[in-house]
Image (spheres, rainbow, N blue to C red):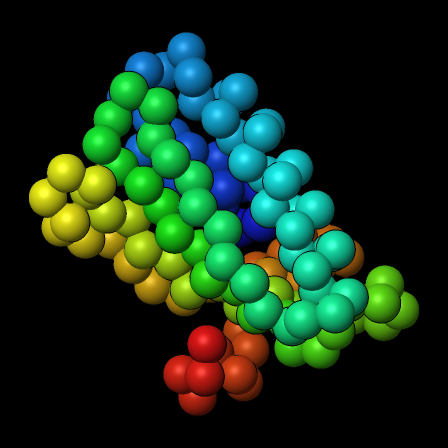
Length: 117
């Protein structure tokens, strides 16, 4: 799976009104990538939230780069995510995914395997 496909799936999971899925995906994918590339120059980690439209669901994405972003060479972003209800606090799903930034391909990271995210 590619990074953009995964973010689309999250938007689809947390937006109850199907008319909002694509606008939600476009806005949040662009902003997440901007945050990773801009904040990643100075800090190797950050957090991002996607709020579901017409739902009480929210996705929290805590990301970590294997090294600071400099657009030279390959770099992997490890994303620990949780989707939860803002009303009840109940966690609907969570996990860790790793993607190579230049291609968006899903990969396996030694950092994620060690649980250091």
